Image (tube, rainbow, N blue to C red; front, top):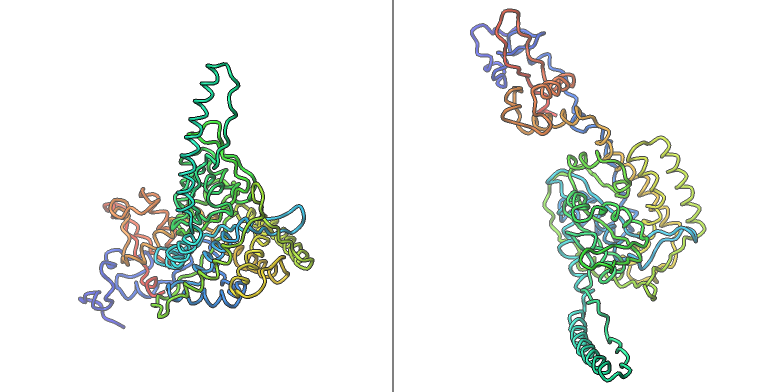
Length: 520
């Protein structure tokens, strides 16, 4: 037995530091008693109701792209998910309206995908996408631009000449009117009065009118919206247009859309195939706020990826950027069917692929019956996602090899790979992301305080100090802080403050922290 009389408790237990002033109701006054009765803390309070992440199935990308994704992820020191997701989004945009996936004569889907990686700051979301946003997309767009500066100069010259001819005609009309003669016919312009725009592949800060104009004049295959922070895109949807969010919901399906322009009354923008691809990352806390909005179908159109972070390790080999540019440039060169306006070329599914898609759709329909909220909406769109993705995979496999004839239909192999990606990865990741939406406000506060404890490593929680100095989000009153700490007591993270005895002055409300939380 250890003799504690006359001994400083800190000599027995170095981490004591003040616990002797606030013993729990079931312990003695010594530090040894305090150390012995702590239980194992429940670390699941850090994860809300999140399911564990599923592993990204690299085989679905084909051998060549799977190898490239692994190498690029090592170079960026991030999980492979953070490279694979932008690859799918970029690939879908480059195929774009040139090829649509067709399941039946009445059902076809554009390839454009909306991808959203989730992770805390420092987990590698941005480094994973850097090879696309810094190198691949700019290089491909430069190739799209080509001789546009020369063609634009020719248009400007012809436009000036057309205006001069028009002025001469107007003068002739006035002269004929004076002489009461038949006016000459109006000359036809040699070029359109709509100024051509430089070809565009990707956009960031966008408005409804700007996106519509770009699709019509600069990116008929459909651009890709890239945002380092997805919330910026979502929050800005209605900034300049009250129906902005509705526009974006419809910008997933590729249907015709007419946008009225404020500056050009009477001259709306008619978008024949209103569709864009989207890629943007976000953090778990920001996702939780997004998921509190009413379900209008927008968030269920997004494919989420939320891997666990990996140990940081500097990559030794650079990713094969030049190879990726050359491969993806094959997709950029795919053209639409000529016409006014140009239209997509349909890629029908083979008989086996259609049967597989039907079975998959029935399975997703069955899962949907036991789901609710946002997850229910996601399952409802799963078969359409698989149809889109099957076409994207066909073209990624083709451009990765670079030697075979381009595909003219969607095979059962592509349908199987797409169904596996949707069922075993994207839907499970949706469950992981949407689990935050099901968590209560108390669970969010508990997670917030638990993360703060791990970061700051306090030995005690002072309620008054938490309220006046620390000021964590959602914990602005003493009552909220106490209810949160009481929940952490049940999770064995904290020990409740001692009860004040009758006749004694009211003591400060202080919770002791279980030292075992720092060992987990």
